[in-house]
Length: 376
Image 1: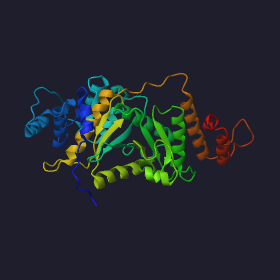
Image 2: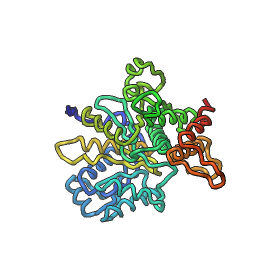
Image 3: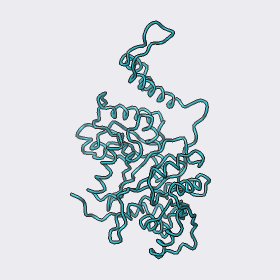
Image 4: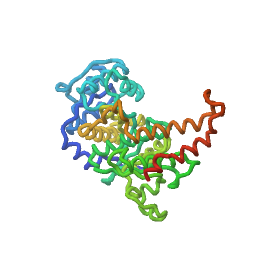
């Protein structure tokens, strides 16, 4: 069942990235052949200007093995993994690097450095991950989010995930990307919370809270990717059968989906972490260097290609205002508070002799006043 079709970096995406200026990229701890060879390939293709942060002795030894002259490149000697990540993040936070690329270190080590306030990379958005998927011989791309970072995202988390993915698609040249918010069914049902979240996200998109994109949900997977399946079920809309982005209910669903495409369909997955001041280029830990086996190098190279184009066109979100929060943000926060209240046990107000309403009663009362019903 595993696909034997060779993976490839799509020519259309590579040509678009080459048309943009080189992106200064801090390569974090490139002390294995896979990360260093990928950085070299991207440098030779004119995509990035690498800054190699790591143990200089190991980097130079690997460069000699790859026959790569490092004379014109900038190297920063740091021996410890955590220090490598922090130094690279400081470079990006100071504006001396437009992107970060993960080398031979754990992802959590790199993200811990990114989240430190003193390095200056944290923005107004939550971190999330996007897989930009392409198939051999096809110009169609499909983005999957979030299959790496947010395990069981709440409705607030999904707002950040959606906005990050939409901003990436804008940077990649999509004027109005089409996002399908996935669930197990296209009907909103209380027994499937992901369908309720999808409906809420669609309402938020309708009032412009998610940016310039067409967002519909809940949609089952077949309705999002197959126009015929959508027609059979009587589903109409701009997204059904034409989705550019799949927002999955949780990490497990996204992880299964992206790996099924990689192993059964020979898809090439470009992994990016978004939500910081600069994009962060990641790849799967399952990729290994083999001289006679090229898929691992294609996975990393496609990630660099997408990351370089995103970094060249990136417009990070502005910090939220201290006063006068937007109406949609206040409404969503109120919705989250009501959900938490409904899940807690009944309490008694000290100023009132009668107990507060039961959780289910509070939920029904809040739905009667629901803000989106007034706007529809």
